[in-house]
Image 1 (tube, rainbow, N blue to C red):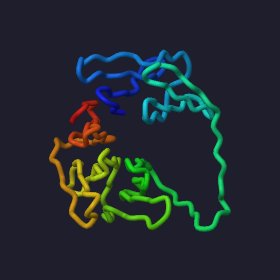
Image 2: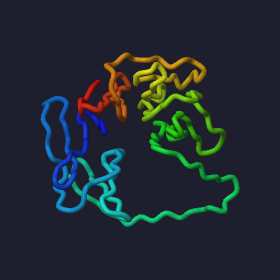
Image 3: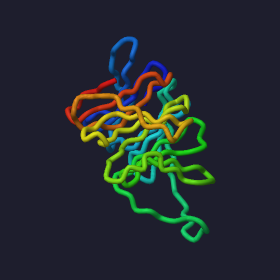
Length: 200
């Protein structure tokens, strides 16, 4: 999670906890002293990071004060509601648009966007191709994802304003890549590969 001049990430410690990398000073510090279970499913918001540690407890850390707030969460279902349907997917990953109007999902090897109300859009429409790990740029103009359309995994950029345009491939060394992450100014993308390299 890239907030301001700091990248927050989990590290395999005992247990897994939250660390911060300061871009300016090139220093890594531990943000959270974790004496319990591993941290999971962290996500950033204005001034805080929300994470799951032990269900049904959701916690958030206020970054300036380094203060942790916890709450017990429950989810109500509406299985009988009209218009809802369940679709089984494998390896699902998702990201929200910066304007909170749509969300982008990886589902069955395709990249699709879903609005709060309205039609689902399949951006890739590439049967037989594995498209993975969509990420929406902070300025809302681009969706980045990895695809093996060329035979090797490469980073693709899709113009949000012109869905019909072909994705632009960015050549990278053959490998398997994970979770593209945009910089706050939407000019750079960080990602990891199967060799545990962090690339931009």
